[in-house]
Image (cartoon, rainbow, N blue to C red):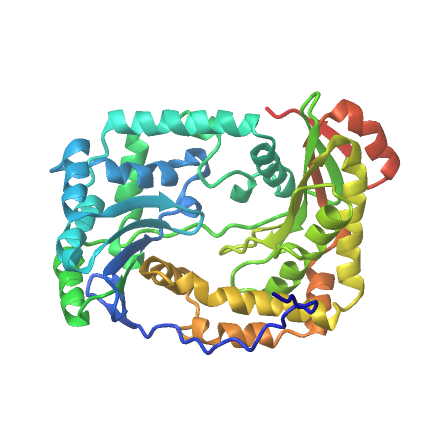
Length: 450
């Protein structure tokens, strides 16, 4: 057997067309998206509601997440056991969750179970049980998860980075699921109020993707959800103000053998015209295995098992973040390398091969998102939540291919602002503080994990 010494060159990507879909508005304001997929055995249904964390009052931070979780614990007619048995009889995978920009109840089922499964989903949304005992159980689990996160250096760094990045009063400075101060005070009445106020058809979207007959699916949606009434107040407008200029924040974990690094700033929102340029730029920096961060910090220097970077666009500007976990003794050297890579991205165009590899990666993984009916249903969500164009996925590859080397450098120069970078690390402050001060990355402050 002979082996080639030349690495194979990727061929041109095969044509891909996102499935055709249709959109209908019911009289009560509910928008129904139908994505028929011939030859599939399954159907996925996502009900997307404008009741995510951005719809909370800040004093009730975390109620959107707990309310969503509570929905799958029963209905007015069915207690938790009865609801679980009903889903098992129908062979459903059913769930409900919340993010910053929306809440979602969803299920996957065999196509022949679409109508009874949709009836159960409608019952869950319209007549949830919202029982105090189940609420207190979920609340206790959330508080325990918060405590576990404080003991996990990576999750601790993620949380403290957001707290350092955004100004006091900006909701984005805490996790979407809430923090200990607000979650501890929540009651089942808060969940009932959140559900009663925000779970309404006027700002909601029902997405059905899979094997079904469109007229029958639309009729079933109208029968089960057409008499659901109301229009919620929607979400707050978040002003993503930065918490200050460049600085170094050390979250003290005495005797830690590793440092979790987080370097970033306020990024872009989902409608920013630089979205595709930022996507390609962040892929080159830290969005694929052979990115600059991973190649330098992992492959060349052996500082980390992996480094990554990217944007988290929301309705308002979410964070831009580069991250890695390194041994304590190379912490300062790793920060210096990371900052150098950010400067290089701002100051020079990427090489043609590097740009080609990043675009090939993004174009190549693109169709993999839509291999399942659930993936197709999820792809409709940003169109519904952010009002993106109907041809967004049809033109996605073209937008990626159109990004030039000048576009990448321009995006980096505009979106990476050295004087605004927050450099946060979770590690042993006693071992690091002197060296960090001498490195002159910026003013250094040490904070407690609590």
